Image (cartoon, rainbow, N blue to C red; front, side, top):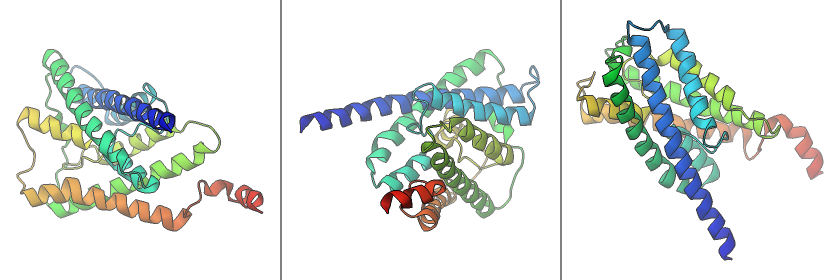
Length: 251
């Protein structure tokens, strides 16, 4: 009876360490590449930057585990917790993501002070006057992220093929579409949060309610909606692409 408990505890510890390390790497590379794009000393075009962000996610996931155990983005963790009905994922993964993002941003600032000395907030050069519309965009992109993560996961799980590269491509596309819009933080919410805290700057003079709507309520609702549609479309099937094989086995 004690052996399964020990194995589970060991798995949680290893996953926590891996999540922490991956979050550090992602936030560090995320902001380093953005600073290179903004710096006049480097020629890093926006489309190249988008691929670099996707590569950062791939590297961050691949180095610790190269599997779907590493999420980095909290909304993916929440989606998996809902699917597995195991909220312990949130309890030990999200704090590691927060700590990892904080350390990653601190390391980035140390590097930035000796290199490009850029203001990463300058990447957000497309302003939107309506907070509600920005919240809708955060909602939309978070829903696409969560649903896309699930689709990639079910395609590659049965075939024993790692979908981390395609997750990186998904991140690339989403950053290319949203990276320049002010207020969108769904790809690296904790990283952006600490970047603003440590630089004592904010691009928005917004109330607590507007902040909550933008960075908490909208993406969380999107995560729940993605979970609802996943259940509605696929139910309890592990992989809809292998539906016929499953029926034959059951029959």
